[in-house]
Image 1 (cartoon, rainbow, N blue to C red):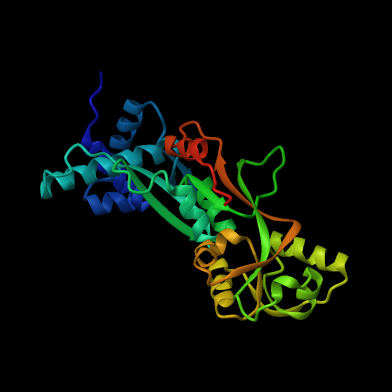
Image 2: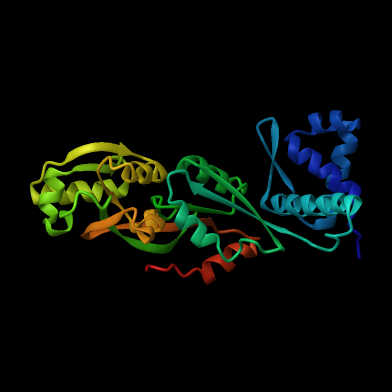
Length: 296
């Protein structure tokens, strides 16, 4: 049985980080041909190609991404052993999570809660635009994307979309002035300043369809593409927010904000996006299998 050569792993990690044989060979003070031979030896031992060429550079295959994760873990453990014996034998599995920058932080924390604080898990959290996150997913730099914007799918789509939760949407604001709860939804929508999601969001599209059916012309105080900012504007009494209660759950529980009305037929869909992979990260399946959202 072949024994894993840590020297090969160190060279492989250098190439993975640089993206070229030339640059890595220069940094390692090796010839390019010698480095290439070492990488091929590692690939032969593992039984998988670790890189594929794109243009003038090298990108990791799926097997290469997994090998890099393990290599990083091995070298981190070695560094820990040098510094202290306290963490000897503790292996952390990384899970790279991408989340839409505008997504509710409360929802993200609820989804990740089963893994937070676990000694065997290292969470790597990234936020960004939907397009950037999906590119990271396809490049295997991200294991799972959390979003409220499900991508379009057809027979050629590489994405797997997992529905996580469908949250109700309400009209939420500060407790004052009193008497708002006794007014009709149409009255509130037509006469109170509103803080709305931006027009490109799915939630806004549903809201616009509703006010058209109700023949209401809204008084828009602000349009916001970030749920955290929408929450802050609502707390500052900028207007009544069209928002899922989960986004402001803490404020509702504390009485800082109140739910003035609920929308029938409007909801916010939360989902996770993954890729069909030969070597899936087992932590992804663990989260998807155990996730149960508290709607209360």
